[in-house]
Amino acid sequence: GTITTSSGSGTITLGQSGETVNVSGTAGTGFGKILQVAQTTKTSSFSTSATSFTEVTGMNVSITPSSASNKILVLMNASLGHGSGGTSAHVTLYRNSTNLGHSSNGMNEVSDANGSNSFSGGVGISWLDSPSTTSSTTYTIYARTGSGTAYFNNNSEYCSITAIEVAS
View 1 (cartoon, rainbow, N blue to C red):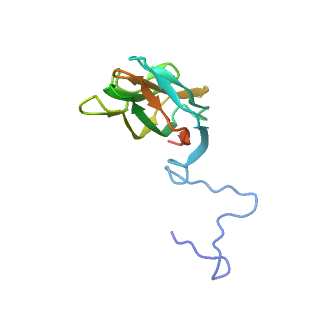
View 2: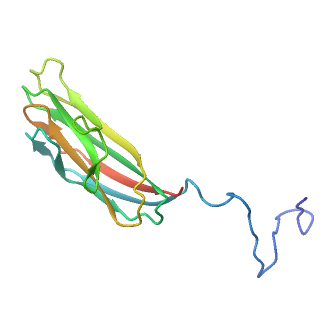
View 3: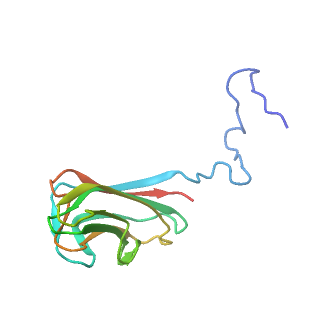
């Protein structure tokens, strides 16, 4: 039950050349290890007057999970706002054609309490997804307005969407 060094001090050698060292249980299997990262950045603005979720042009990222049991962590950051007379602006995340957020409120919003002023602020999404597939999977940001016009990345700052495959 004791491991000692072959020379009495220094490096511990497990096995000899050509031998296999087996580890029982889950030790060393890489759970939680980051396997791949994909990212898309956008520097142009997008606006919509639609009150139902509309795809934000250029805000998508595709990733192909290496195992159906792995998770995908999706991160998004951007600015979101609405024009004068608008009430709110909402964003959500889609996996392929499925809205992963609330059907009408999405995953994040900005709003002005009295609805008469334009409003803008930074928004983010962080979502740990279980796509249960090894097929290419696309994550896309969608936006909508409550009324008036919603603006995504209005001042053309850098915004991004990142997909990170995590071993599970």
